[in-house]
Every structure is written in structure tokens, then in C-alpha cells.
Image: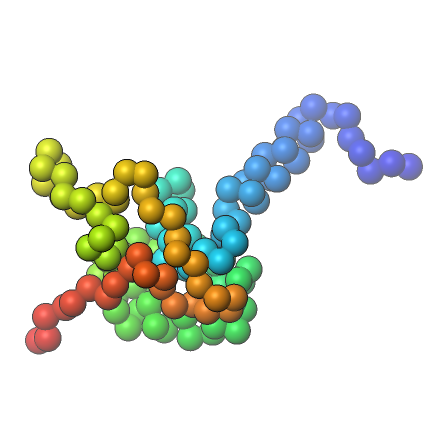
Length: 133
Ligand SMILES: [Zn+2]
Ligand SMILES: [Zn+2]
């Protein structure tokens, strides 16, 4: 018996599953920060580090201290990584007078890449300086 299905609902479900997998797979050499930033654009934050953890599972399973490192800069969920912890480097952003906010250069610079297994940010990111209490 073949496992192939001709049921259109099942075929659509399979297609969607493949598509979701493709959309949420880190690009080659993509660093965890560029990946999470990209996923937040498309899927948003669910108040956990799901994208950071997903990246780790696929790209750097041994980087077990990743969450701790993110949390140490206030990144307790995916979006907080960028609210509290890290920000795009100055050369990667431009000031938008209309929104009075910084935004990525257009087109958005793609990840500089990190070596395999590294959970460090690529050169597009820098730590946010936080005031010392
Ligand atoms: Zn969040
Ligand atoms: Zn990157």
C-alpha cells in the first residue's frame, strides 16, 4: 500500500507543513539574532524564546547557555532580545524622520553569517548599552 494520498485536504496540510518548515528554517550560516528578527517580522512573539530555541535546536544544539545569555540582557522572550539586549549596528540602520524611529536600511542587510555552532551575533548587531543602577 502506498503512503501517497490523493485526499486534497491532506495534500494541502502536507504542503502547508512543508512551507512552514521552509519559512522557519534558519538560512545557511544565519546567526541567531538575524533569524529571530526575521521570524518576529513574520510570526511575532509568543512571550517565550521559541525562535531562539528553535534556532538552537537546528543550528547549535550544544549552545545550552543561550537562553541564560539572552536573559542576562533582559531577553526573556524573543522580542525582548531586541527591546533590551541587542540592537542593529549603526551602519545597518537609517533614521526615518516620518516615524521618528530607526529602521533597517533598504534592502535590509542580510546576515553576515557566523561559523557553524556559534550562537554569537553577526556584525549586524551590537549590545545595547544599559544604564547601571
Ligand atoms: Zn516578546
Ligand atoms: Zn546575523
